[in-house]
Image 1 (cartoon, one colour):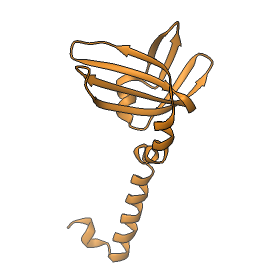
Image 2 (tube, one colour; image 1 turned 90 degrees about the horizontal axis):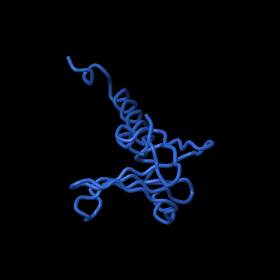
Image 3 (cartoon, rainbow, N blue to C red; image 1 turned 180 degrees about the horizontal axis):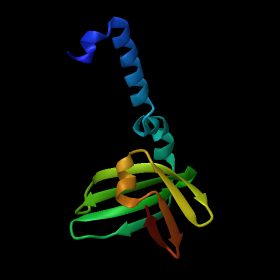
Image 4 (cartoon, rainbow, N blue to C red; image 1 turned 45 degrees about the horizontal axis):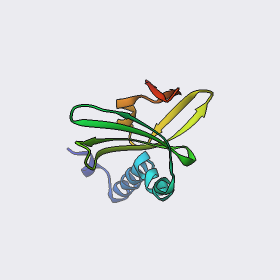
Length: 120
């Protein structure tokens, strides 16, 4: 017998409220709040990795924002992973709004002599 038939109407409402609360606290929802200030922030540094078909870009922006994105054949962005960073010494601690970005690049980076290196 499914769990929904065992709990009453009040239980279903409580479960729905908990689920909405969990979804509302996800990093993607936080980006909706930061989207306007992210869009206004100017790029302070840009790093590029050129590949045969899919070029990758990593931009540091004002107000501790960053964006990692890819472009196919110099066209529009086909993937974008924005986030915020915190700097301690020469290390940048990256907090992506979408965890997929950290899976691809890692959650730490160092910038030395115009080169960026990512660490997991």
